[in-house]
Length: 270
Image 1 (tube, rainbow, N blue to C red):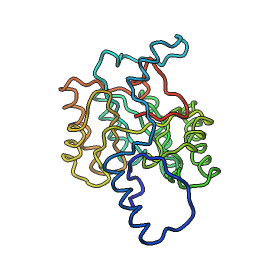
Image 2 (image 1 turned 90 degrees about the vertical axis):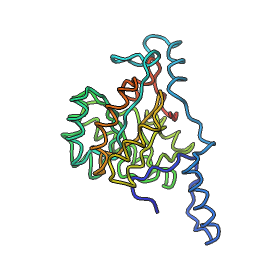
Image 3 (image 1 turned 120 degrees about the horizontal axis):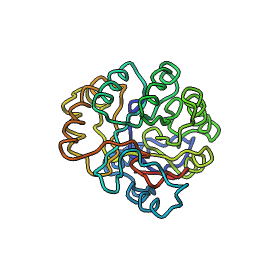
């Protein structure tokens, strides 16, 4: 059983309540490990560059905002943090403010948004993008539709109450999504955002190792996945920012990465 916040490979899975025989369960576990290592070919995702190209053809009123960066020209990367806020988040926000780096926070409702509401307000106030990581990190592909709806509606309502606007982006726990989740997300006005870079910071508190993993994997249009709930992650952020800036990268939010295109509810981006 993976830790609560372990991101697994995003993959279309089928809801089932049946228990697998032991042999089948072992095979399923092996398949899951293979998917975690290689990714899932079935998942239909859209890249930032594809969204930008489509956005260039859209009417002005339908285009996303550039912010201060045009990622059609700049070598952009999006820094994202899952499952917070937490006691580590104030230090992270100070680092980001000092470095003038925006980020996208996929916030978790239970024990996080409800425990640290002022940090959610601060994220928004300081120019970061506040998004959803569900209410209690239940795997959306493994629960009943009504429960999945609650998992998405509750953080939407909580975030809107705090910052005056509902999130438009959502990261499904462990990156697991399917057609049913896509349809529900579309209904609720949410676009699903996965990642292209992970430090697997849920496996280590070694900040230097986390830093190295991020730097080694990052390419243009990268979406970096980190967690501000783990002790080793926030200390790694200054080194990540410094080195990637030296390599010519510009940090943006996920929505800025897609502009002049816009994320479409119900679609999956990576």
